[in-house]
Image (cartoon, rainbow, N blue to C red):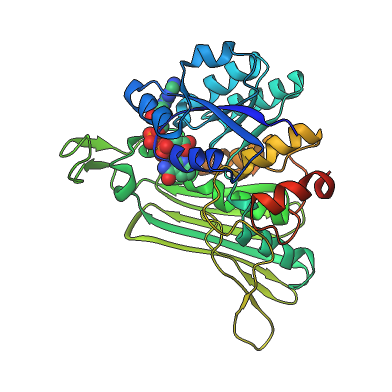
Length: 376
Ligand SMILES: NC(=O)c1ccc[n+]([C@@H]2O[C@H](COP(=O)([O-])OP(=O)(O)OC[C@H]3O[C@@H](n4cnc5c(N)ncnc54)[C@H](O)[C@@H]3O)[C@@H](O)[C@H]2O)c1
């Protein structure tokens, strides 16, 4: 099978794990040949560390041998870079979210369709052992019929945001930065949402950067987007759910993700990581840890792009689909507009729930060999 020549745009914090997995043989379908960043020093450092070429974005777009662009830039650059790459005929896998404005996201989906190109969007953690095991539990009927779900994340954003200022800007905030993990994990199991209704707030809007070593240390800054969110969701299946997010938490992080069914309760792991334990609780019993049925329990960021690369070669749809990503993106936009207007947001987009990954894959060796026959 011919490997997919790939270039990464954006050599920041998250790029390291992608570059590692694309060069150490973990995802052999990807042949990482180049990287690019508007910060030249960063670009050269990454290129040297991983033995790949440092190229400008223009050079990458003009190079006909590069088939796939992996967009790891900050959210404001997702739309323009993804659009340029699609326009010159390249497949794109983008970090979350797909864009900043909802219309931009819809435009990218339409453009990829028009061009017949694959467009995939993170998070790809839903393809990991934890969420795939949770999906297995629901698909096998072990909690009966899902009735309701509850997702909650509290995070001290100062720890991250004062080093990564894009987290406080439009396009991020806890809603767009973290919401995707929870909504995508639920989407992969429960399918599309019909309506959302929400309240949001900004807690502590004016701040001073207190992180020693941060570029903006001791400077004043302002939160541009809500950091406290509560939302109610009605899924097409009839499941009712709540989402609670608080980025002004005193603790580093507390997460909770549960699906309540007629015959059991599924207590999921943290959807921001690949392999946290999953628990099943039945009537009159305590929660019991369920053996992970799927592979990729370790940090496997890049899995979504690799699965997409296999799909390109196999000529089938990939799982971290642009349609699901747009739906998740619209859900968070719907939450924001509902909070502003006081009205319920009726979802316009929909998607087909991605098929579960085959069970038991423990890495590239097993996964990629079986991939062709098992997943088509
Ligand atoms: N940091 C994390 O732990 C993490 C985890 C999961 C996902 N992500 C996602 O990954 C993406 C990047 O996040 P990050 O934390 O690596 O950010 P970062 O700020 O550390 O890195 C982003 C890089 O993109 C470059 N860049 C920005 N605009 C560009 C442009 N127009 N052209 C070329 N280069 C450009 C910046 O110079 C920077 O090096 C975001 O979408 C984020 O949501 C981050």
